[in-house]
Image (cartoon, rainbow, N blue to C red; front, top):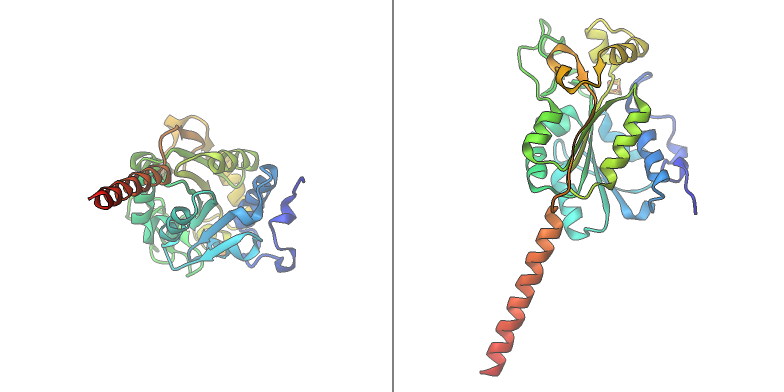
Length: 278
Ligand code: SF4
């Protein structure tokens, strides 16, 4: 049976809670479209969210969901995946939630290569709590806690995920929706830790404070500052390199862990056989 986006989105919950012009709705609709295109059974999908504007995403999805504490989506998602490796598990995290408060969990999920898809709504600030500086805020950007420009170098989510060992790493923006859809689809189909860094717009805080007053201006900014030349990208200079950066096959954590469980069971069985024979 073919499915459509409204098999995954709860219509009665619309309109979204997000501000007018926020890019989160674009990401959510794209995720639902990918679920439909892949004809995934909603009962076999688990979406885990943390805290923040993007952390509200699970409110609108008619799939299994877990809404957890700030920065802790990945440990909760890891638990779900280990209990039932057959589930499609997605961690939906903002840059403040997933890369700043939850940065430690992010690098270890990538290192372990856990079969989870992390979709980062990266709008360079903590939107829900008032637009504070986050771990991905480009240097010199104005936020509510860096009124004269951030002095901190930001994480480049793509480089961080690659260095930590993810199996699939891609970046798109909410302006490049077709690309976003393709990367989310590839990430969900990938066995292993997959990351899609989605450069997003937060017109209410980041845009307003950085002379991009409307969502349209922010979208034009993403259009004009994106490149498909990976060598030209530099988050600090607001030059966003888009594309697939890693797409490799390697054993994921659950597969290796199940093998250890099998060996342990066989060992216990042989010890019981030995003691029974004595
Ligand atoms: S504060 Fe920013 S991120 Fe949050 S809903 Fe509004 S525009 Fe979106």
